[in-house]
Length: 304
Picture 1 (cartoon, rainbow, N blue to C red):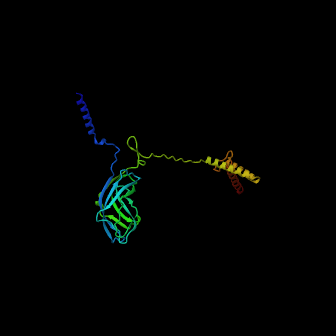
Picture 2 (cartoon, rainbow, N blue to C red):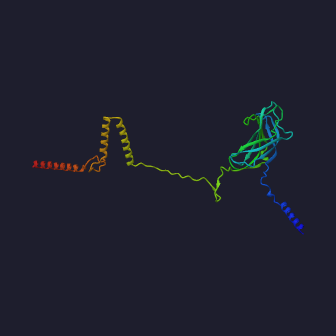
Picture 3 (cartoon, helix red, strand yellow):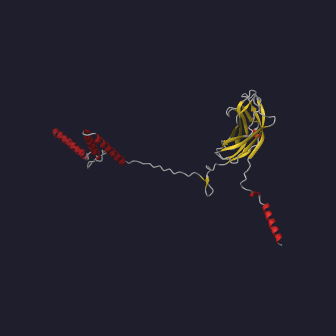
């Protein structure tokens, strides 16, 4: 009687294990690189006058990064092989030692236009097929901004340096190429920090305080007196005799100017006008009038 019960339990456990959902797979499994492969047709110019051209087809495989971050250098894998019968050959005068420069084009992110990879130097004689790197190239670039970009294969040049290409291969019809979307994430160090309520906290405003200090006339006079006293003391300590007398006279004159006599008139003279002069003016005027009146009376008496 117990055997069927045990068998039922074992059978139920096996069903539970078999029906485990797919999303329960271990989280440590990494995603495979994103790859784009297609045949790209090029028109290659092998001289400066563009008189000699070659039609070249290259199977190009681009591998996109999964961790592209703004402000950090990213790497894109480039691997190319010639289509049979459409290889690029060296011109009749040969190439000597050159390098292969491969490019990828970007659109969609501001200030991100291309990535560049370079091969090891190779020596190619006249008419020989120019070899492409068997291990592929690593195209490198840095995006200054986060966003979503569209990537496609671009030019392939041959020459001693990227600025002096001997052979230039341009894509015939770039609009027909298969493109791939590349997402560039925001750098965690420069991204804004969200606040607890979900909003993004921006930079805190700074408070600027400007203080204006105005010196009053009394402060200016006290500063002038202190400066004059210190200058006088230094001069008196260094020079004796006549210099001391001159300083005493200057100090006495300054004291006379600063002292307002008692009963000084409000004439705007700062106390230097002395007592009120209107009394003397009126007295003089009265004396003058009396004198004039006396002269008139005297002349009338003489005329009689």
